[in-house]
Length: 325
Image (tube, rainbow, N blue to C red; front, top):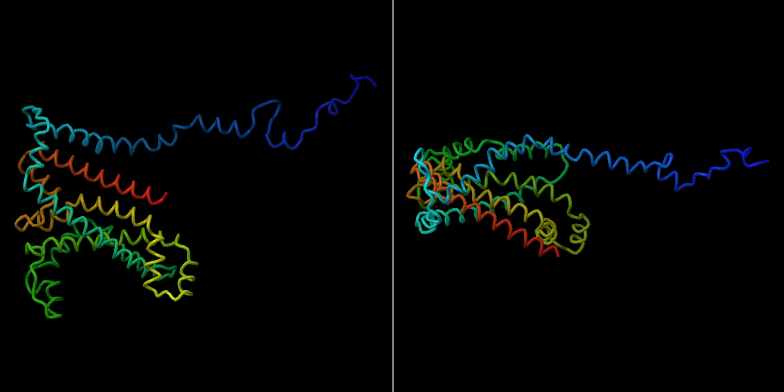
């Protein structure tokens, strides 16, 4: 039989496993490569969904930040034109005694709220760890201070801090034989009172993040420590705390930024008083910019606060990277 009469199908090579795996048809490109090309053609799809949010951020955040940076080098004169003064506004802020006191108050308040909220959040997380049905309700109830508007929180604590003997907290102090306190009306206790309010509001947020981090801690370590005779406190200190190191670093950054930018609760509770004992950088910037109409000096203070926050974030990030190596 001649070659022309042979079966055409017999003349074709058999499709092996490699040919079937590549998915080629009539010499075409592999199916997975065609799919990748199709997906690569729509790289702009995620950006299309993000575009509305990015436009809002651009208009309400990034453009005002750029304007504030420009204003910090100018003497702002509304309707008369701004005058370029270079670094004079920064020099005024840095050599101002009020700014140094406000910066110190900000650091103290941020440190106290950060440490207090993280410690209380860890305690609440350890108490509420588990899968019980009732624990879900308790966690939701404990998380309420975070979702309540800060203005409502400040007004609530202002009522509880009423300085008379029939005030809520003073009534509790009277039950244990302690005298009435002025709280936010006393220069000696006003800073601690605001710090307590910030801890009460920030601890539930830290609690939820720590609860999520506790799921990654190896339970076998608890059993091994228990077999070795470690107490509950020792297990927490030597197993739980090291296992949450990365969580604590994230919480520290978030809480520190929250503390450095504190404004609303101080403004509503004391407005920097009494006698400037609770003046922080944000309230000072507000007074300089909007009450005294020194917008350039206020913008310079805001830029300095942003730089301090950025430096703190970078330092903590570098320390985390060094520990992970």
